[in-house]
Image (cartoon, rainbow, N blue to C red):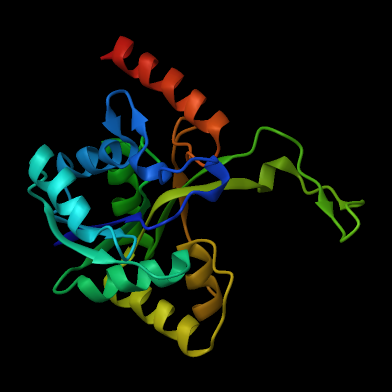
Length: 232
């Protein structure tokens, strides 16, 4: 079977309060996006499609593919205005593949073990989505921020990536979402749920598999990187 990873790096990172898009910010001497790319480069995936901002495709080709010798990155394609539109552009660029792994490039601590778990689940259940149980109590609030419900922590998980599916099913899901003009799609599992009214299979990610979104996240990522070096 052929495995294709779609790595998303088209976001502007407005919550980072930086003039540099977060995916290009330095983490341990490398651009943030590099860390996820190199994990996929050395994993069982056969190819990587990098989805960037519309004006960044040539920059990424020169500064990532050539400089870091990322041979599995076969295409660099421009993304859309929203995450789900960027995913769809990546899916259009993926051809003749069986399993697709969709990953946020701002999650630098994905591991080979997580990648394999999502692939195994996708092959067995038709979906394999990295996630972890929440640690904190979660409150559902109304429009005035008054709590209206407290769901049991036993049934609440934090969604991560990669989110992995057979190519045909995830492409069909996104085509349905776009044709029905459904917006505010925040992850690929949501697209599958809305398109097919079918639950997705969650598998263990890692509490280190954070998405770097704010300056505080970058500080945490730097600490995690030091621990990873010490464990190597």
